[in-house]
Image 1 (cartoon, rainbow, N blue to C red):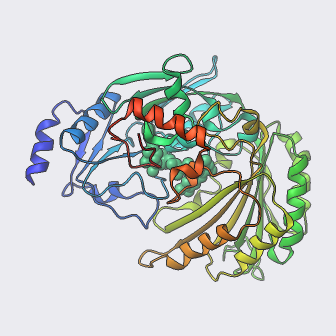
Image 2: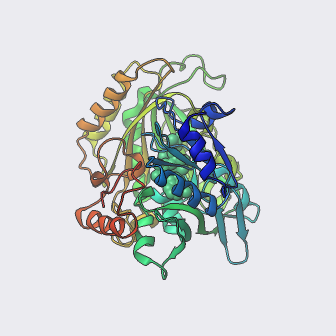
Length: 455
Ligand SMILES: Cc1cc2nc3c(=O)[nH]c(=O)nc-3n(C[C@H](O)[C@H](O)[C@H](O)COP(=O)(O)OP(=O)(O)OC[C@H]3O[C@@H](n4cnc5c(N)ncnc54)[C@H](O)[C@@H]3O)c2cc1C
């Protein structure tokens, strides 16, 4: 045991969770996060069980001048929830969700995953906006914004946030909502993990029965016309419609005809956030944009939809992403996206275009720290690589695609930033206000492993 470890153990006598050091069982599993390219070795992983534990862990780190990483679901793509030689405030034992069905409110602990939130709320036929992959943490997702199938109907996850319990840099446990600490509450809705550790999130819920949803796979040879029809459908679609287009390489899966495996494919996925019968009718054109090779649209429970992309988002691969938000996707942009996908031999490379707008766009841009409300489309370049590979080509492919996009960019989503700097996500007045809130609540920049807003 090192002197530092002995000192930390001795000082942590009020801590009710687990303290995991490098030689403890489970250390290697617990230090890993979703992105396999991130390989960091913290001094201590503090597995908290309560807000008091979180306060104790923050105090321990500060007293020993150790950097703090906060870990919810571990999905930070740039790896902010991992730290070399610091303390990970690990919330993975804080995943309880309580639902008040009558008032349509869910209260979730800060380490809950989307799967936890969806399972608990759907027991009452309720839901709130989440993301597309069920093992994403609600913590990072909500504090950055939160885009998912229900966002065009019900707004971002942060638009459904009613209140938080938060542990401040000073170790105080406070409540923030529209009345109590309204500036802090404003900043927490889009400003990321800069202001404290949220131990409870309260969300507004909405009735949601089984949904009509799924995906269709088309031959990539028709990408140019499919993309244009997808865009046209989106222009007239009601808020209930969530729609995503993916330019990908058809996997060698049993449900893919052999002739398409390994070749360019277009996946169109959709969800109707309303009655399933209505959804089947409204989404029908998405299933007939061309000649489908595979059609997996059907009525399904919402939590099933929320897990359909999980198998493609497994932990452990090296990952890189570039993303931007746009009001229009013009023809030159469509052509560039298709050409760029075709130019890489990587079977993992994909381009994803998601419809935003709807209820997201009806919230005034200064009402929350999430500001790029006028966007209609999110464009993402993703690539991955196997453990042991360096990922240089994948990184360069995503960067080059993003650099060459002809469509004007209206902003960036902070949860999809890697190394662009936080200013990329915020207009100047928003950033200035965020800096003021940071100065008020974390003047020493204790929470700096994030898209960091300098105090
Ligand atoms: C496979 C995958 C799919 C995704 N899909 C979507 C999607 O559909 N929609 C979408 O909007 N985003 C999506 N994202 C992005 C996702 O929202 C961010 O990566 C988010 O940060 C993940 O949150 P987390 O808690 O899992 O991450 P973590 O890595 O645990 O945390 C990331 C950061 O969030 C902060 N944080 C986390 N929890 C807390 C807390 N309780 N209190 C204070 N700070 C906290 C910390 O600053 C931390 O560094 C996806 C990411 C991945 C990897």
